[in-house]
Length: 396
Image 1: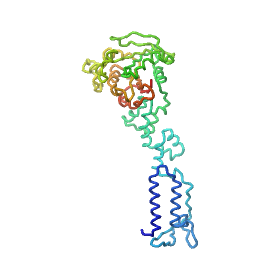
Image 2: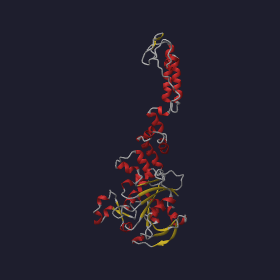
Image 3: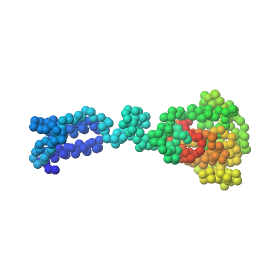
Image 4: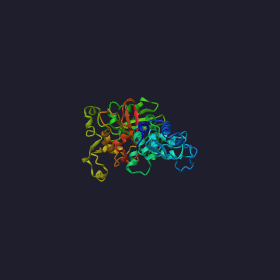
């Protein structure tokens, strides 16, 4: 197309305007449309843009008007009886891709509220990629995750549920789950109220870590309004296995709390943290299995350890387990290093699948950077565990 210098200047203005529209992140669509309108009006005449007809021109929308000549350029104008209105431009007039991009900045609660405004937004706010992105981000902020709220479980079975449905089933806020030390543990214990005090075993590397070992003191009277020690009871198995305390929970019912350590205090102080599993007195080498255990060898999941005979006998009488770990990112031991001990104690050969497991992901205080609960569940491969389990975050 050829034209004079004025025409080329108008074209350059259009290109500059288009470039600004593409690069702008928070541009005003209404002002952009109006400015484009004024620019075209100055180029082609107000009557051609607004559709106003002059005398001698036909009012039929499909009829072409007479040619308007401007030096070397020929402009064909098609009159219209409909006037363009720029005051009715709204967010629903934006392309779908633009609306989805805007929705990607919203939280799950905002998306749920926006979906109730109209049918169009209800469809857009259910977009698969929107909720997949939210799930991948928000799951690391959850303070609790369990066997029924772990997204990895749905991925493992290739679930037909939408990402929005998986999010609503897994998010603790959507399920109105109360978290924290004061609520999580008593609620678990209330479900275990039997004719006699339930037996709870607490174990894990967090009991032997300097920053998180104070969890035991919380059970033994440091917060008597929640846990109050009422005395001890003797061991039931060889090697003092089974020795523990009677603890009253919220002054309503009693439990029998048993703490299991990998060795004596002197042995724990002298051993290298990387050698904890190999020197753990609760475990024995897998090569030392007897004939009874070899029957279920296919269920061992290549774990190089088995529980000792006294620990196996104890596990057959326990009503619930609490696994304690240090979730600080600066801890000398990683979360995954506690996996052999956890899988060994919770083996279905001596711990019935109906026995629940509570994992306490502990840090010293709320200023410490921690590993998220969903990462803890992933590193311990809890989605492969055939029992009721829950990971809860607490700070001591």
